[in-house]
Length: 124
Image (cartoon, rainbow, N blue to C red):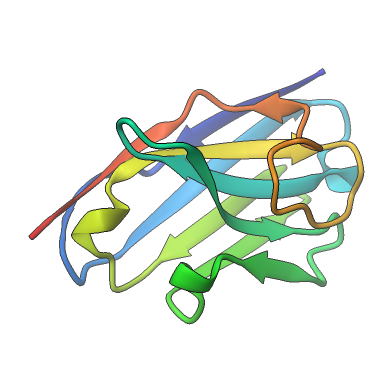
C-alpha cells in the first residue's frame, strides 16, 4: 500500500509558477512509476506528466511541454511538478499517482494509488 499526499497548490496569476510536491509513504517509493494528472470541473482527468522509477525518463502532455518539469527524489520519497508560465485554462485539481510498474504511463489505468489532489487556480 502506498499513501500519496500532494501539496503546493494555490492561487497564481497567469504567467506565474507553482511547484507541486507529492510525498509518498508505505511500500518502497523508488520502484514506482509516478505521474501527475489534472481534472477541471466537469471534465475528464487528463495526463500531465510521468516519470520512471529511476528518474531517467519522463513524458509530458503536449500542452505542457517546455513549461512543466517532473522530477523525483527517491531518498525523500517525493515527486515534484514544476509548473511555469501557467495559463487560466490550467485551473484544476492536480493529482499525483503511483504505478507498481516503474515505467512511464500516460493513461490512468496502470496507476494503483492516487493522492487526494491539490487545487491549482490560475487567474487571468
